[in-house]
Amino acid sequence: MNNTFLKACRGEKTDYTPIWMMRQAGRYLPEYQKIRGNVTFLELCKTPELCVEVSLQPIDILGMDAAILFSDILILMEAMGAPLEFHDGRGPVFPETIRDQSALDKLIVPNADESVGFVMETIRLLRQELKVPLIGFAGAPFTCATYLIEGGSSKVFWETKKMMFREPQLFHNLMEKITESTIGYMQAQARAGAQALQLFDSWAGILAPCDFKIFALPYVQKIISSLKQFDIPLIYFANNGSTLLDYSVESGADVIGLDWRINIKDAIKHVGNKAVQGNIDPFALLLPEDELRKRIGRLLDDASSAHGHVFNLGHGIHQFTPPDQAKIAVDAVHELSSR
Image (cartoon, rainbow, N blue to C red; front, side, top):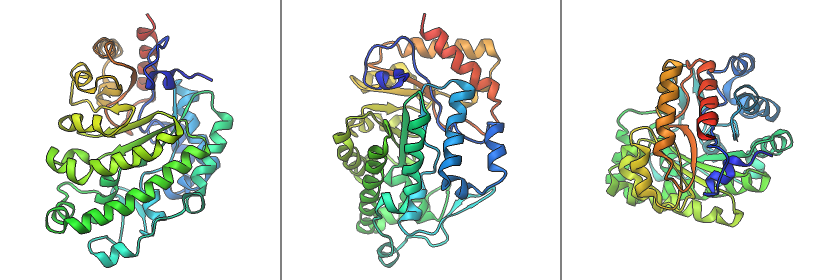
């Protein structure tokens, strides 16, 4: 087992900097597209054998140092009782939004082993196949709440912020229910064999720091606290969250994920004795090879003072990224960091 990723998460000395990429199992790989062409996205998420196959692809093809479970952050929302649809061009859609207490009352806190047992089966199968660590994950409560309230993706999050500011108790009630569900879900992943867990807060960056502290952070802290018993690395990633970095450190996570909007050297000054993960712009993978290698080299130099560093993108790899470019990045990180 190549444990370089786990060592970096724990701040231990490594022979080189490990790398994986958010959304590494996905649409940019022709091998993924071949499988996806035969099933819907939700069918794929609920078929463990296919999830295993696509989770392994970036390991076998690109040489990543960690695998991440193939799933979606909104699978848990469906298990809570919120009907979920995926539409090409629109993404996820919740036809029945959660905007009042009666709608919230219809949501349940599910037994994860029963309601999303296919996720746990995927983890068990992957552990039999993998020679690198497996990362499980969930969506952070605030991010999941936005989808339930808005009914899908949003640009301005009008309904979410309207509830926060006009009906704060209702918003907190929703956050509590999502948090309890997420705790059960992530604990089940750990029991099934996930060797690290990441909490994705994709929309945290829409919040002012003072609102993040009230409406999002306490729920992240509660989840992370509940997972400490498993003694595995816990990663928190607040996208577009450079202004939230001090609060991200307070989350209790062992590893702080960083987007590309902050220099990693500056971020490390805030993070202290925690490891960092990130943080190259996903579109930088489009650079010519020599320029991409130079940028990676500079980032590795800037991260040299970190308590531990896992190289990653500042967000998910874009679907139109040529796989050869991702391979250049993986090889460059391995080569340049091992010198």
